[in-house]
Length: 538
Ligand code: TEU
Ligand code: CA
Image (cartoon, rainbow, N blue to C red):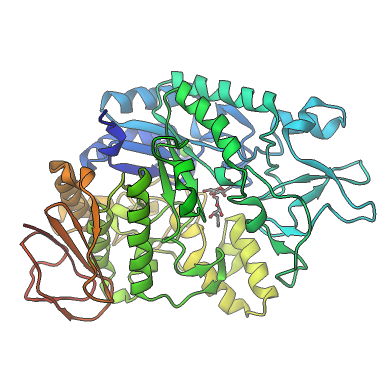
């Protein structure tokens, strides 16, 4: 059977920063509706929207208070229905974000669990006793810093578990009634006409035995990743999820950081739980262990080999969703185009790469106009809770304030969360009101309105590549073939097409095969110029 989502072009929306229709400084659903024509014109037809649910916004919506209400500043359930219907009418499918590793601490289940130690809702989460001497059950560090355990107020030796912030208690997937309630919630969302879900941090739902391990930082804790992420035995929970997804015909994308390829068949393919995965194995090339202050000096060759591996492993077993940016990542231009002189042309080259890979490609809002990171000068200018924690950890690991701010500017999640730049008016046409987060100062030169008019813009280049991809099913159906030619060039074949990406600022002489169908420069003279990309056809 032909699966439509394999042919789709994906686009990710960060609702807080996309378009603010009622001018209160926060993006909203009406704003997204007002840009559906823009999205249609760009050529995308599958949209993943980051969490829109009611939330205290400790982690910008990844802390859900009510799965079936909309965060008031975004709009109402009626607005959401209008968005789904209007998008569907244009042939644009909507995916919501499904956050079921944890809820907000303000979710009614958790509130009930906290208040009464005999509440059945205690079993919905992970409540454990400490050692009785004032210490929590174990010494793991949460993803956003500090211990994974938080003391239950009013009780002596009782703690609850959180992989992320202390306001995001983890759900216990062993609990049948919790699973049943989530299943019913998913079914109701599907009835509203969405295509499915991007499934958040789902590889965290199995936890290792809660025992202490060797400390790895000055805070006396140890990173929880090895004990909370991709923990063996997770398959049994994926079976439950698969039942829910299959029963409701959900199209799903698994967010799978650190996913081992040996277990791919559990995730995707004939017996897998998800339709596709976001593979991060080539994404976090610039840092180690997701710590901003552990920067790597990566070589193009190693990035290339990771990308090859990802493509080859995934096509063997199932389907992937390639991406270069998202709301947790810095802008891809800053990460991958390491010589600023070539940012503009590099943005086009990366478009050419992303859209010629195997899998359903996802473009993150602003990527299509070449938006870049935003340099901040002091910690008070950062919004994200993880920026604050990474700053603290960087200082504690011996780096200076200046160095720590540098790391945040390279990596912080605030980089991609600045408002979308629609035009060069004040606040970039995002709003008439001062935005909730600092505006990227580049909006007078990088914005949609100017780029629509400019034939040679990044935006018009994205449209061209999308058009090419849609014009030939070979980009969807043909195998990915690694075709290594040079250490600084990422080259591969897709059916009759060959793709050449120079990911360095050097001129590289190269004999190419076939006729050029797409070029991120205006010409080709036998030498691949700095950050030049080509697609040829034979
Ligand atoms: O991210 C999950 C995740 O694996 C994190 O390690 C992520 O890489 C993190 O952003 C590192 O800075 C998801 C969401 O995408 C993220 O926005 C949420 O904060 C997180 O889950 C918790 O829900
Ligand atoms: Ca608004």
